[in-house]
Length: 223
Image (cartoon, rainbow, N blue to C red):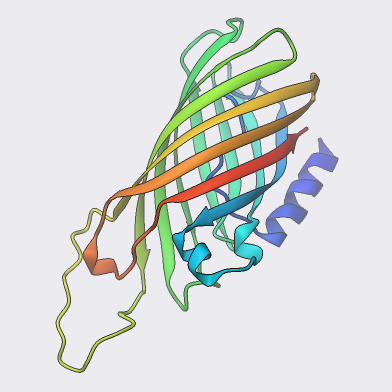
């Protein structure tokens, strides 16, 4: 376990951000630590307009989970390059069942380095389902909602005396649909691939920030 904590610490220092979950609906067993290191490919209309490739197209996924109870675990992962998201999940079915359903809630903050003094706070809720095909494969699907509050942003265009919409307070609401597959090479080593589609369905015009539809293809190893 000591080596896993070392790998996680180094990964968090590098920063990272993907919208991918890169885990199945099964919660981590009590006393175990799962570390996940992955890489994604991000595409949206803003990236397409800029053309070419950049580090934004290949976000890192750096995360760890540990079991707190028979059906409860706790996770931490890097977001927005310089922030952290902490979440907890509740499993709804017995661990002995090949079918697994879970619901997770979390809170995260980050984005100081890439937003010109701004910062973003998020509160995600994710429901997931998975099925163990023997000891080798676990396909999984998920549906998520995340509220985002973007603070410290200023309008980029305008003239002196212009007035702007006040904050509504509810933040921006984002829905994510995901599908993935875990391939278990051993009881302690798995490879995961996942696709996520994210779209904004609620906007707060007073935060001077809008999120665009995005596609993420990601792969990772969990050990």
